[in-house]
Image (cartoon, rainbow, N blue to C red; front, top):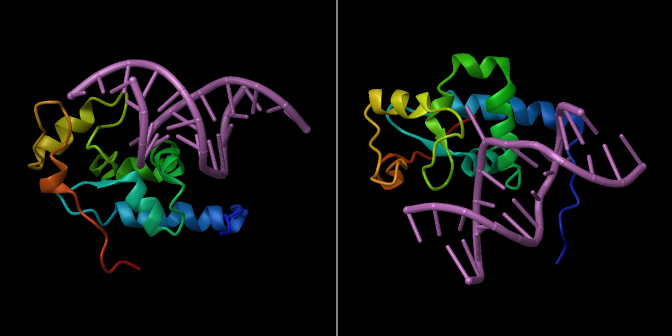
Length: 113
DNA sequence: AGTTTGACTGGAG
DNA sequence: CCTCCAGCCAAAC
């Protein structure tokens, strides 16, 4: 069927940015979610990489629980070893391979917005 | 205006 | 479980 040639207009990019931060702010303590889930929830399922970009470079992200965002396999962000420490301090358990036990801690947005 | 770069994901080996 | 590769897409070169 049809593909989705959709391109983000500057307006949409701005909305996406805000939505991402809004969702991250609602991740409960002791839980984690993934880039893909956030992207899908913001309405752009193919933009998981952009979610990572926002959390990495947006100034506001510094004062948010962005450490509660990991990839789909429960892997923590490259080059940010403190992320694991932060998560463990709020009760998140890791498996032997160093990944978050997603089965136990993955959280999904429900009634946001 | 073409190429490279990732805080991603899914699949293959 | 690991690495590598292709597809992904806006931003940075």
